[in-house]
Image 1 (tube, protein in one colour):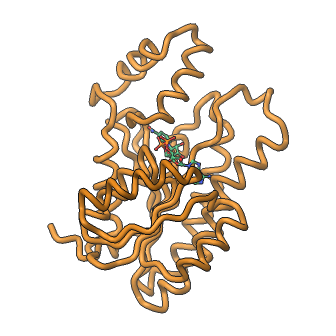
Image 2 (spheres, rainbow, N blue to C red):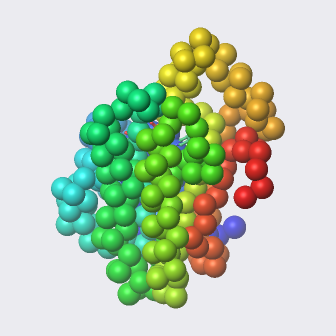
Length: 259
Ligand code: NAD
């Protein structure tokens, strides 16, 4: 299927590895021109080179933390317009909520709620003027299924989800959509870190913790980042203009509820 986004400019945050990198790959395959970001410049350049080699597309890089005010301003100055924005950054650390400081809560809110909102603020009006825009926020299954040890993530991401639902309605008439993709059990560094922490609490190794999670996962396997990348690319396509304000779970059936 032609996604109809060849030549569109896409900003992909947190794209040096994991899910962000997979989304960058899927958008590159669809012919988009990329601006990719991560905090570490070296790893980011390696990712950019790989994308150029594989897809022959234009890939610009911008190293830094885009969830900060300074990072967002630097991005906007270097790349004033975008047609597609993928909001993605590392999730907050897992841990017992009683051990968390006020700074921990503020940092989580800044990185996983306020930062993405300001990135949307920087680009949505331009998208609306040009009558095409696609924003995808990579959040988490915890939005639908809050989990012990992940309260920082639950709180920050629910705040973002609520804001998105409201903001999406204000730009839908200009062919600008905003959706959230909620991953669970995708085989990335982040997943392995979280399951290591959770496993320690249960007295289990990482491998045993993965097995324990897979026993509750009807698909019986971990997710492949490319699967999430392709889903995000579809949400950014010309065909997905009637899908907005949604939170789309990708979890191999892990979440047992209906809604
Ligand atoms: P990852 O740790 O494998 O990769 C994260 C990427 O983001 C890296 O490129 C890292 O350099 C970059 N990054 C981190 N913080 C950043 C920041 N402030 N600014 C710019 N770049 C930053 O993680 P992942 O598994 O790809 O997860 C991506 C998102 O999805 C995270 O928010 C994570 O919490 C969430 N998530 C993932 C899963 C899963 O199954 N993997 C499950 C639930 C939620």
